[in-house]
Amino acid sequence: MFLGIDIGTSGVKAVVLDEHGAVVAQGTAALSVQRPRPLWSEQDPEAWWQATTAAVRAIDPAVRRAVRGIGLAGQMHGATLLGGDDQPLRPAILWNDGRSYAECAELEVQEPDLRAISGNIAMPGFTAPKLRWIAAHEPEIFADTRTVLLPKDYIRLKMTGEKSSDMSDAAGTLWLDVARREWSPALLAATGLDVSHMPRLVEGTELSGMLRADVAEAWGIGGVPVAGGGSDNAAGAAGVGVVRNGDALLSLGTSGVIFVATDAFRPNPARAVHAFCHCLPGLWHQMSVHLSAASCIDWVARLTGAAGAAELFARAESTGPASGPEIFLPYLSGERTPHNDAEVRGGFLGLDHDTSPERLAQAVLEGVAFALADGLDALRDAGTIVERLSVIGGGARSRYWGETLAAVLGVELVYLKGGEVGPALGAARLAQLAVDGGSPEDVCAAPPVAHSLHPDPAIADRLAPKHAVFRDAYPRITPRTP
Image (cartoon, rainbow, N blue to C red; front, side, top):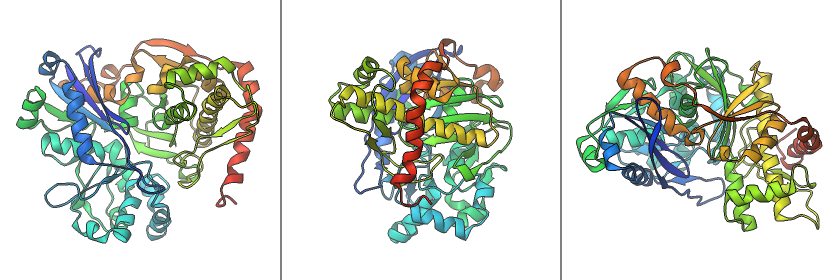
């Protein structure tokens, strides 16, 4: 059996697969995000470790004893700064933190080849601008920094004693030469760092270390190998069989992502499209990224007093698509694709005396769908053809939302059995490849299809006028747009 661990933003998930790829056990533990100032988003790395231990130990002891390998996945971009004793110097700055907007512009001026080397436009979510912010605002901490790790790689250090990262996660730092799959001295120098501050690089299917004896004893697992693993999006793709050129998925987690596997490095930073390494050797991928997706569902549920996401979806379904004039702008944490705007914030437009919790719920489902559609357009502008998306993440549980998404995106949505398990599933498969070998196409085969949704032209026609209003709204709410 193989254990996959996903260090998410809202929690840690542990999943065990048998040799046939079936999920036999799961464990979870919640995490919280601290936002001490506007634009800030942080977590305590020790909280990741405590949640990881809790999630693993929630699995039946007999299943844990049968584990032969472990894979890691995790939230991207988080800056975990370690001193000479390998202890965190401050809380980790997360992917949805927007404080380093000015530093992004500085980076692009200092290193004009940044986009060509990294394949991406500098954004506050990436790791490199965070380190420039630390150097400017917390110089003592910057001076004491000996290693910078991503969230899952900090957990790897605690598990194995090794400082390693995989290509897909490293690509999200702005320090990787993405085409060459190696650290870029020029990009590191732009933030006052060098290769000595970085973990060694491995492919997601390679071994990165062995589980330490004390951790193995505490977890009730043998001293098994730990695979390189992958970023949450890349591992999620591996989990649902998005492992060939042109395969694509839609991830509906805290953030929303459209992910397309490519057989070559194909950047398009002008439209804020991400170009990263895949977690599998010889593959890359493009992504449109939206900082708030399923998190908007949880937010509006709290706002309107709904008991949870299920009740929120039911309220929306009771009123139906385009049931009112309300427009929701889902920029609760800023936005990446296609706007690259860390400071823009969300809002409702078109409220009237008849606005109800049900209509607000429907507007939120539509607003997230509109944002995803704009991201898909940016991918298509880069020459990417997308006609079919496999759906993963917590938002995949709602068939009703899927009908809205399919209509707005204009593509077939394929829901896979177990697809809501997400990146932990792919992490376990990467562990299987690292331990037993085999081809990614065989080990990372797509799970069985639960159901598919095709675009409904009637829903698309009803939502088209609201989508036009949505697109017109962004230039009117941000002073930086010409």
